[in-house]
Image 1 (cartoon, rainbow, N blue to C red):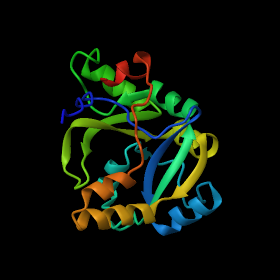
Image 2: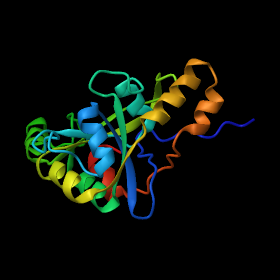
Image 3: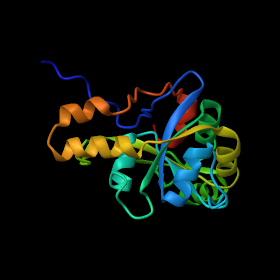
Image 4: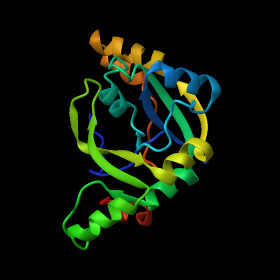
Length: 201
């Protein structure tokens, strides 16, 4: 059977609707459980710290070890507005210097200091959490972006820890087909060139 074409090296793939996009984070229960219960972050969540959101469920599983790493036992799916997500992308700076993309290293450093968001493209992961050739978006939010994320953009918060554990159990049993069937669908996000050109995509 013919294999589907490989995804572009840099591409946003995310569960999304006409108005929202789903991103993932993992926290200790003291933050994750009240956030899922109340639909907003509790007071223990610090708005003055950079927070990283990830549209890729599998990359989140890689980062939090299927919800088994200390301090990351509660996996959250957060539906945020596409308007907010795209504002963050437009105002983001790449977290590393790229020759030809940035005028020079000094100007990139200035942009990085001033930007309320930053982007990393890290290798996407398969179900066994091995790196794939294409990249997955990690979006860091600080300052104004972090406050807007918590107070304006977040529409809903769900605890998906049981789903993570169910998929992980199937992977451990070697039933990758059943595990894949449970993964959230993450089609390409309709990002225009002006949204991503300054981010190396």
